Image (tube, rainbow, N blue to C red; front, side):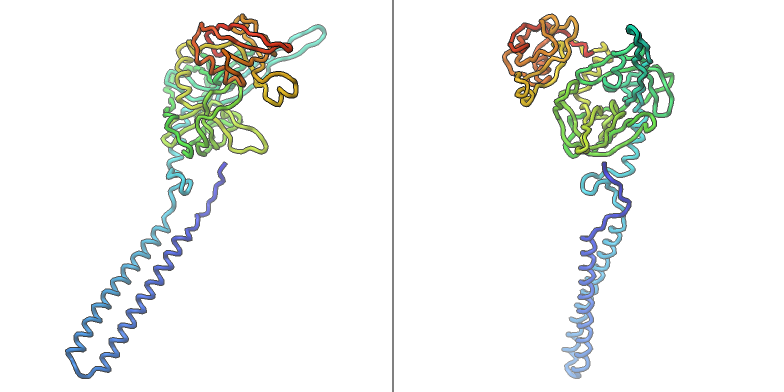
Amino acid sequence: MYSENNSKPKNRGGLALACVLLMMILCVAAAVGVFILLSQNINEDVSDGGEVRSETEENYQKQIEELQKTVDELKSSVENLKNTQSEPSSSVYMGISTLSETGIEEISETVKPSIVTITVSVPSTRYQSGFFYYTVGGVTSTGSGIIYNTEGYIITNYHVVSYYDSYENVTIDVTLSDGREFPAEFIGGDKNNDLAIIKIESDDTLVPAKFGKSSDLKVGAVVLAIGNPLGIEFAGSVTLGIVSAVDRTIDKENTADSMIQTDAAINPGNSGGALVNTNGEVVGITTLKVSDTEVEGLGFAIPIDYASPIISNLVEFGYVKDRPATGISGSTVSASISRYYGVPQGVIVTNVEENSGADLAGIQVNDIITEIDGEHVETMADIQAANASHKVGDIIKVTAYRNGEYYSTNLKLMEDRGR
């Protein structure tokens, strides 16, 4: 986070230049004085030779006029320098960007009406098991969203609205930037890439966001993150930063394959909000940050170029059409874990979807997948890459480790519904 400093930066280079110019003026003025004295002495010493005196005086007069002209030019230069020094700087980051404070205000005011607050509520339900009672639900979470079009479709992260898939009677509400509230309908989600679409019905015209191209982003470009950190109380918060990196790969389940890294502050509640360029265009969907006491300024956004085809599919079908999937979730077995437990490196299966290709192929939770089609597997990204190189209906050969033994099985890739 950048700290604000109201004091004006000192321009020591400009001050030094002014001093040099003033010294030059003094030197020239001294030279003029010397010429004048010499002229007077000559007038006193030379009584005869009028022609010689007249010619000498004429030469001195020309030189005095030229020196006076030089003095006037130097004075003008000093005045111009003073005027330049007094003008306020229009740059927010000296030497980094010419984005003015007025420009930031205009971008913020333009984009804010397209950013909404999403509130997801899970009602509490009481259950009895024998002599014991227990309650589940009773949870409320908030996040951000981006108005996609005037029909009321709103982009957000899947994890913002994931309770919808986990509990019954979940309600989703949307609060616009002007404070109006609307109930929302869950349209579809892509858990693998952490994207979802919800929809509201509004009689008034909504303000869709303007979308740019994330492929145009360069490292060092100035960006703004606009969203609702910590909920509706801080709705419409704007933070400023730069693009720290592009095309980052995060070794974390259910994240996009490619991410934009930024040091613009992203906090809980910003998820699903907008990462905006200096043209006021959405170039990314803010999704997560690295939270650690020793880490600052590590936030991530899904590039809009990557997200756009997924969003289009979610709006039209409710899922990403014709995308193959194995039907498993898993996490990495690192080299250190492998040595400690005496198991191979790979991806340990944490969940198998019912009736998926993995389920029908006999893969079970706690199996460690080590190879697909003879290629070594270390992370879920490796499995996703293998899926991407095939189409729905293809058969892949999976090698896995279970209870001290390896086995191989043929897995039929099925259409990934993303949830």
